Image 1 (cartoon, rainbow, N blue to C red):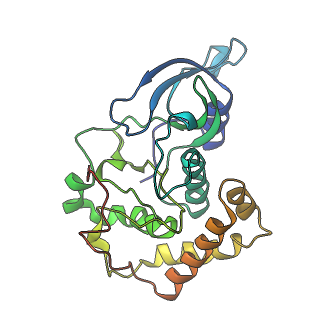
Image 2: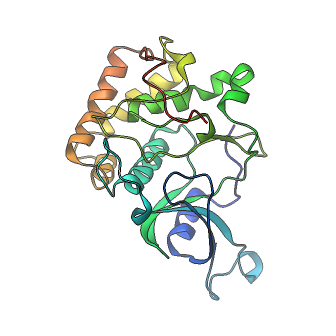
Image 3: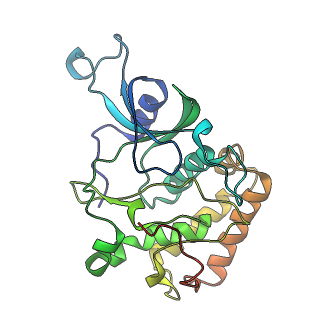
Length: 254
């Protein structure tokens, strides 16, 4: 199911997230780093349908200055990884990650991602028994990006039934350990849809290609190289890797 969080096109949403002013901000209580919910509104000249002023947007703002130092990730890079994950997911066509940009805000440069109005009682643990196959694109994306922080609560189901993946600040580092709660996929073959997308992605990650350049502006060269290596490994061994349920897990789980 395609996300129905907004009637605006992804291109228009990105433009709004980049250009609209942040008119209100509040600290999100659930973040380990400084995470804010921000209200974005157009200026007086930015009109909506019929010439009226457009409705505001709400977004999650993660400033670089609020990123907590980590032993396995270079400091000040988490916001760039959020943007890189969005770019890569959009190129693949999965999973659904809310439109994400990098811009200045009240606390400096950071990632700004469209807020998903989701049911807080729903997460991977509550949905896996009846909807496990819906999570395969998320789990495969985590293998590709070496996600070190896939908690159950980083999967959201909105009112329209669409599944969103969020919180990708701990991705792409080849030296981190993959951590996930989705161990149900271990050893399972990737579906044909996943493999077809990965095959189509491979030439687009060659250094001269636009997608590779876009990602290269956000990641270190060793991280971009490691992404290509992981992609090749997924195609050569087309099944989810076996992970240790005692070691390859985030904390907390939710």
